[in-house]
Amino acid sequence: MAERPLRPIGTPNLGFLLRDPAFFMNERLLERVAEAGFSDIRIAHTAVFHHVRDAGSRITELAERAQVTKPTVVYLVNDLEAMGYVERVPDPGDGRAKLVRLTEHGLAAREAGRAAVAEIEAEWGAALGEERLAKLRELLLELRAFLWP
Amino acid sequence: MAERPLRPIGTPNLGFLLRDPAFFMNERLLERVAEAGFSDIRIAHTAVFHHVRDAGSRITELAERAQVTKPTVVYLVNDLEAMGYVERVPDPGDGRAKLVRLTEHGLAAREAGRAAVAEIEAEWGAALGEERLAKLRELLLELRAFLWP
DNA sequence: AGGCGATGGTGAGATGATCTAACCAATTAG
DNA sequence: CTAATTGGTTAGATCATCTCACCATCGCCT
Image (cartoon, rainbow over all chains, first blue to last red; front, side, top):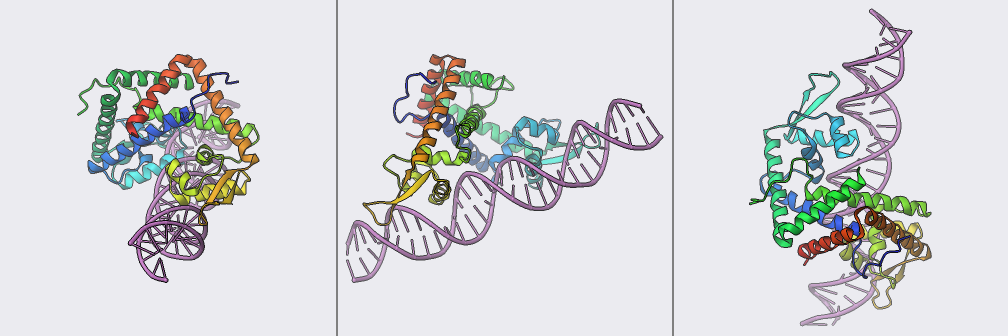
């Protein structure tokens, strides 16, 4: 298998090429969110911020969407609740369930996060050229469609 | 900042687009390496396998190359040494230093890892088309050059 | 209507990968 | 020759994640 032209020596494999900039973005994101006044947010919390719906989401739903286990989400939500970013409200439609919802503070943090991401992507766009960045995004979306049909 | 056209709703940001397939590759890599008979290798170990030179590398060098601290490398190397993948030999040129080198077992595991990566990349190439995958790699290399000049 | 399997959420405890701080041994530079 | 630097290690902490066990509620079935 793998009868394809060998990569030039020293060219990192796709795993590294993908992971390293993802890591970079995480770090910058955290930096800028901290600068915006939310310095207690850690990278794991982004799973919640990214997936929680405005009307509130169940723990189970968050776990599915973020592809982690329920106890992991509970741990993150406990954390965020203690820090005032989210609140748990009873789910009106099901006595067992609770809805996790962003507080005002949480909404502000999410906005800061979104702004930071947009900023970082803009910097990358300025460096590569907007069309090339768009092409990169397109290819990554295609890859994602293949991996998670 | 960020006066660029908004992404369509639901389009994941670049962080996720990059991280998710990197994660995917890691998991597949580990699976296949395990199938090849090296089932005790964990993902963190890849840092050592990927960066160690055939002639042997110092702990310090590995830490720099893998972008982690020295104690982290010591921890990984202890692990790999106990499992028989690497050995420590004294550095002939410096009494303080030791060289970490792959054993026969380690070389075999590295080969299995390389084969697995090549296989996965070939699958991606078959799905996206080789030229498009090459384009993706090219753009990622460009991004890397921007981020780590 | 009552019981019981499925579902939503939690707690306890373990594990893995990382870090910082402190340290010893050997080297190199004044 | 001493002092600062460098290579490696140990100890201990932290964080993010998991599995297993559990309780509460729901909704179905007889």
